[in-house]
Image (cartoon, rainbow, N blue to C red; front, side, top):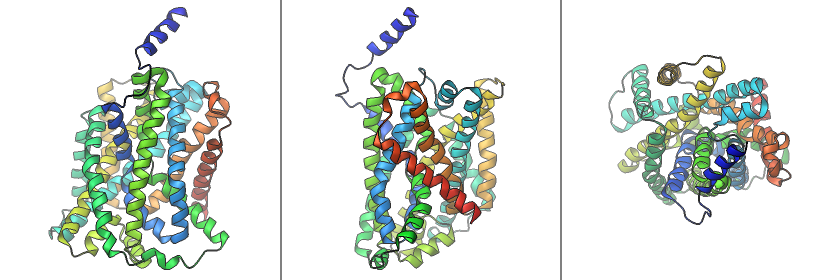
Length: 425
């Protein structure tokens, strides 16, 4: 026991005594978190949020940062509460036992895997629309196009987790510039848009109903829970006893960046397009960028918008693949089978390729998938499980009694009840 304690002390002694310096690795993770979150959900957020009207959008904008930061900080703390090197599936088993571990690992997989399906559909639609409207060429059959695109992304995945995170962080720089450029470009085209609904203050019941159904989409739009497990494991390896403090700093900066960027982009879009045009974009199953490309005659925007959408969706696909593959591998291992690591990687990639390809070919409604699969299922893992652990797990007892715990629990319950309503309505 003493030897173990000494080894822990030695490991922590190697970590920085203070956290005054900000490293390049911290910046890489900050941008990797940003890159995972900003994808299909963000590109569809102006459509869904704008259709709800002006006042619900303002309230959702005020909730965006606390809802995003407190929830992801809670999940990070949960992973950090486990043993050294334990990912989220291992920590669940450590705290709640084998049966609960298997159940939540299954839930974790089904919280993330549908997002890959959403990205597969969005990517195929974006490229197909770009070829047809901007390049003026007939796209190949949908099944062929979807297969090529997904296979290309999985080729990047084969390079490993660290390569994925670095690639995503590099892709974020031009994406931030491009998204900011597009939001600024739309400013002269602001015609009021959603402001036409500002004079009509909805009744409290109608307002609450709109917010209730919109929160799952907001949860999905800012979600980067699939990469949180890998993030927390790396923070613990890098900073030891200081991991929680440094990870909170990285999360807060990443969330400030994404909330500011996304909200500026969202408001710029909804002030440019009328509610009728937003409804048309939803009916066409296109991201807001693809719709804007078809809407404006400017050749620069027509080419830039779909390319921005492609980069956003592709990098988010890569980030979410980390979490989905982690969950699937955990499920396989919990069955008692112990395949070789390379064999397990190949089986995981083959399964992802086939299912993503089939769904992308079928082209279901993306916003429908977000509303019924993405946001609410993620909420149970991202919002409720860490809060339950704070109440029950001794290793997380020091986080009890914080007001943010009540807020996170309330948002999680709202998202889940919205799913139940959407299924029975």
